[in-house]
Image 1 (tube, rainbow, N blue to C red):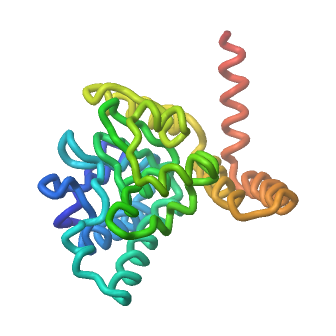
Image 2 (cartoon, rainbow, N blue to C red):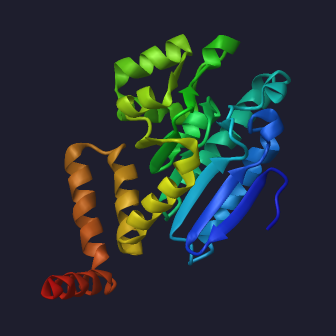
Image 3 (cartoon, rainbow, N blue to C red):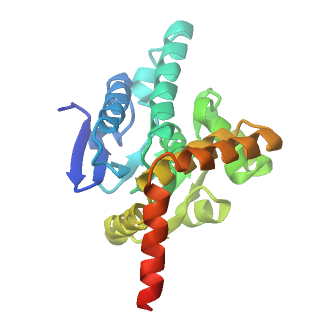
Length: 255
């Protein structure tokens, strides 16, 4: 499948989606948003995909936000439609069965930071800047920003969203917005190492764990625990646990 603004590439079991609008700082317009969802959904049909990576073209921007040229033409109806379409693409990312790594190669602003928070792992280049500047252009930060309080806490969320200020990659790491910070030249290798760590685990176990983490966000404690019990039981519906346990004992016998 060929897209105008998304480049899809594969390295064995790792599928990479690159937002390819460098002349617009990889900002997301409606076409790019729709293509992103289509590309994400297409990878669900590829059983070989064990890990998905999202990044931006070039070295300056991961995703510079929503396309401000399009934002300036929206009204009440078009504005709600635009942001709902973006939410549906980000939700598809969160619900993807494979782990998703954000390779944050530059500015991750607005929709870009929301996409980072929708991924399972985020690795940033040390020159990256992250922020939600919507209030600076008269708009509230919405949709997947609802994830932010559970990631960095309520007070830090208030500070970021009410000031609209950016934070650098190291501060984002201290806050918990990203998992690692590396030099830009080392970003691809760092992403590949993380993908390898993820793929060392059972694919069904990863799917069940990701699904469970997402459910925990919306459940009271007792219901979250019960969901985990059911998830553990369903893991035994295949032979994946048995094979993993046998492999564990085989490694122990060799040491």
